[in-house]
Image 1: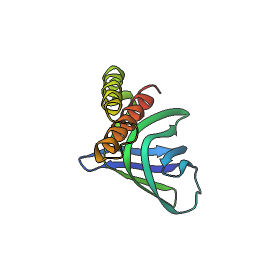
Image 2: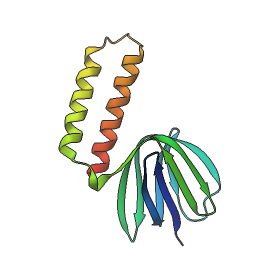
Image 3: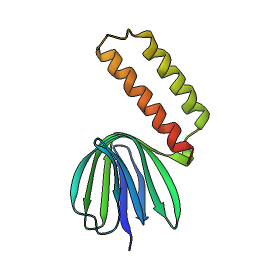
Image 4: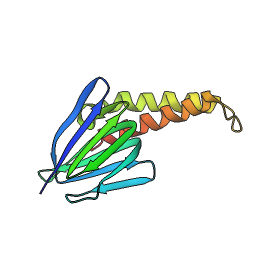
Length: 134
């Protein structure tokens, strides 16, 4: 038995195919999905979706959104996504270093929109790096 998986971003259909197992980065932690999973809707955090197809693992960097699981179908709607094998890991490392520098410029006690944006950029860069290494 397999799961039908669709990963959709506003400007592209990132992935559409069958998977034996899907691991989602939900806002409450990692969520494993196997055939026969109960129906649910969950918020997706910035992180890496992993799917197993033909006994091989594929990683997709997700930049937040929602997922719906119903009748062995998983639909993931995200702000942005990239398949790990298509990510240039050197560029991702450079983006992480730049994001960390921006974050370090802000004070420890500051809780501004700029700090939240900087933290978000660090998370995105880390997800891209993690996805690219699979």
